[in-house]
Length: 268
Image (cartoon, rainbow, N blue to C red; front, side, top):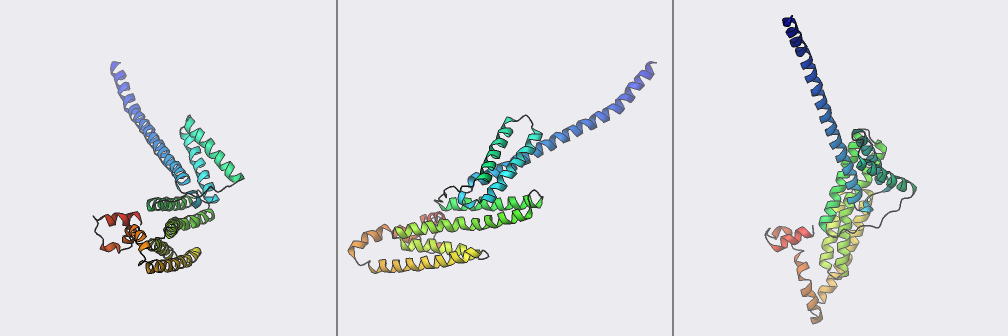
């Protein structure tokens, strides 16, 4: 009798143990899949917020903002299914939905953000390029329509050029107002080079013509300024602009450890 009991227990253990182990492994796999899904959705949501808040407002169209808010709400709703008790997710859904409703009713373009340094302009370009790839991926997985994606990508790709040309234009105009004409020509030439790299955009040709006109004007101003260099009254101004004149040398002739190399980095 005891032998039968022991045999029954061993048989039960041999049957139940593998089943229990299999169920435990499935539970672990389900938990790992849930964690992976939560991490992916959280990352995707954070991307939408980075694009909304770190790309300067003048480079986001109404369609771009609508797309970002709609995708953000979609990601949050999926997150809520995995972590239903999260008040943080619920509050973010409410906030993004409010922003979406307001944008659909009335789109007011915020005041443009001035890009003060080349670093700011490059960073804006990086965010715009990442935004373009984000839209491509969303269209590839059929999360958004291809027509919508093409329209947004077209605007974003142009803005990734314009954020640099806008910076160079602003710097050039400021230098021209300060009568630093050589420096102004340098910035306008940088702007011209950017436009020439992207002539596939129709508006780039207009930018090229504007740059050529500004360069010509400042070359005339520079010639007049240099003609008056023999005037003693202008010598003080000439010395004050010496540092900016040095910036116009060929970059290849500057040593990497030289102070002029740092200025090259500053002005792009």
